[in-house]
Length: 219
Image 1 (cartoon, rainbow, N blue to C red):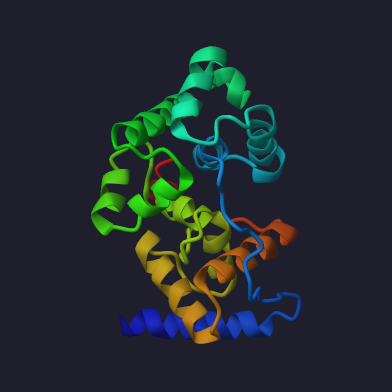
Image 2: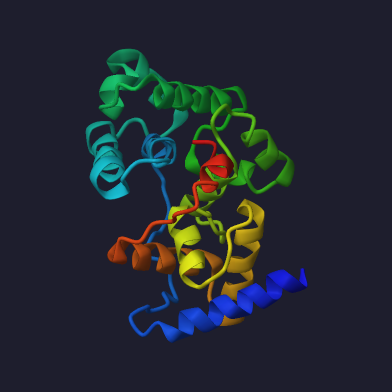
């Protein structure tokens, strides 16, 4: 634990040394209310460019399929139009994961984003969520972040930022704890620090050179 705390302090000093990095005191994102769009985001985001590939599809689902704002209506839309058309996506792996997630929620009477938020509020349910094939700890944290939980989703931007600060990425939980402690030391929310790092790294086009992150993200 002491190593984590010392690393968090080093990360804070690095953050303070970056004049071009502005800490967000408030999150830019207010959370999902459209479950079809939410599922599109969390299933497609892994390993794909968010701005050019994921975001346009999320927006399209919200605009073209407004009725798919809950699981019941999403299932009806999939039955009528087909998942490939809804997502504008053909690769079978992500289509299967999307279907598995819909089935997981349907079997547990999780119909809305609020229902999923309530479900993930319990630790045992978060472990159960990881039973969906292809969903790992990063996707869980990312989902929770999109539902307004105060958490860190360790992705290539977080790992790259740690590397830039001279700190090693040992594993998912280790890096997550360091960034969480850093947020606490900076007196900002964990989610806002996550977003700050994401926007900073995106603007710099800096990515991690550590391919071990892929093992933790279950891409």
